[in-house]
Every structure is written in C-alpha cells, then in structure tokens.
Length: 135
Image 1: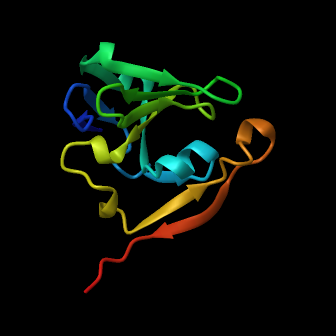
Image 2: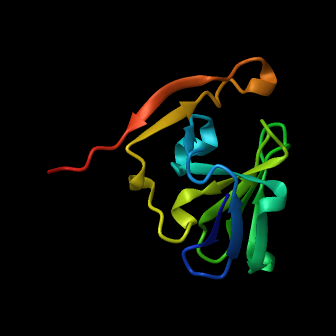
C-alpha cells in the first residue's frame, strides 16, 4: 500500500490517498467524458480517499445513468476524482493531481472500453496508449 497526497491545480482541494496497488492500476477510458478530459486514473478504495480540505469547493458532475460521480474543483476546474460506475467501491483518482506524479510517467497504459460499459454488457480493453519522449 502506498500513501500519497493529491491536490487540484489551485490547491484548494487536498486529498490523502491509500493506493492499494500503488500506481499499477493506472489506465485510460474511451467514454465520452474521459475522452474529453484526457486524464490517467488510478484506483483507490472508497475508504482510501480522504478529503483533507476544500470539500466545499468540490462540484459534482453526473451524466448518462447518473451512477458515476465525477468531482472537480469549482475554482480551477480540475477533475480530481470520481466514484466509478463499473466498481462503486472504488474511486478513480486523476494521477496528474498526485504529488510527484505526471501522466507522462506512464510509458504504456491500457485503454478501457467506456463506450460499451461493462454494466451494459460491453467493456474490456480496447487498446494501449503509449508515450515516448522525444530524444
């Protein structure tokens, strides 16, 4: 288990995380929202995320089935985390918000089929996203 801290861009929202799998759960999704926000998400159990400050600055966005809960800072607009529809016992946390982590730290990421959600009889891995820094 890895403990980490995370924050939005302006620093209003501060989180403490207990990452059961460290950063090994990092992935992307191709649903309409994830495609547009472009974030790398890592998994955290519900009891592994604590809002240390800025809870009153978190705004909730829901769409489609209104099961998943997507949170972002109402001041700077940064998506910090979401409660998953595919596993409501987990949060997906924006890896770029984790102290000392960049989405470019992941040379290869699985992309999950969010367009055909597992709860709707679809899902699975639809591809792999690669990052290779220029020489």
